[in-house]
Length: 359
Ligand SMILES: Cc1cc2nc3c(=O)[nH]c(=O)nc-3n(C[C@H](O)[C@H](O)[C@H](O)COP(=O)(O)O)c2cc1C
Image (cartoon, rainbow, N blue to C red; front, side):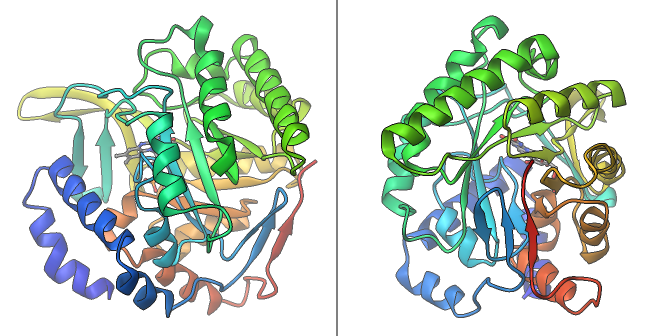
């Protein structure tokens, strides 16, 4: 299947501007998401290969789709049917916003990497709620749904908590877990939220909301994860992890894209780098956190997962699961299924599944 993508579809897509190609892919996936036939066909392959239990949730396999691909929750069901063990949608902000001006997405084909400066272009939390209720309601899911929430461009850092609060309250009825995005390089000051003085009140507030929601609905608390950047010093990472553990955070997603400048047609573009070129930084971050927490704190490893070796590296260093985005563009939609079957053929993977519990 990957061969078909690489020989027929990818050459056409790669002739187009990257954002246009993405819009076409989204259009097709949205239609497939509405098609019972497409879902039944893909469902035949199943996605239950090497289950993982983490932060109270059961994942059919350890390969998830990273945030940013399905920003509005328009096709999580088809992504799950393509073999992904979880789908993280967003980043969503309370109200719709257009994101940064274009051009804002670039390929670096020789490195199988991308640079983007999209800036959370999305339709807002209320639209996402409607999409999910319609297309991927709780109880009808073949893998967990994570919702990645962030701050709007127009919101000052001092008021950022209000944005996370709004999206949490709006989307709690449909979320299996939440990710607090505090690390995208394309929203001004967002990364400041990783600093102790901002992070502590943010995590305290969200933790309070989580408990309040659980009491109100008599349901298990929704796990909260944080997504961090690969550009932090070890001291900063230590402080982030300390804060996360103190505030009952269920896990860390490591990492977001790294800051990067690209020269194209004599213009300079700044954005976030993803793909193979990010792998080393992401791996170093995972390794440090895993060592710091004696492998006891759930880590979802993201950044440059592009083949079974790069996936294995993250799992060996202490990640309980991985996510990917960029390799989907370079390798095609069957990437999750390919990784899982190759991993399964390796002896080192525990065929009975993995069970990671948080602190
Ligand atoms: C075009 C694009 C858009 C992205 N948008 C988001 C986003 O909205 N929120 C987020 O947390 N991460 C976003 N990311 C980062 C990815 O989720 C992931 O952390 C990063 O790309 C590294 O993984 P990869 O090398 O497998 O792509 C985006 C990445 C790309 C390439």
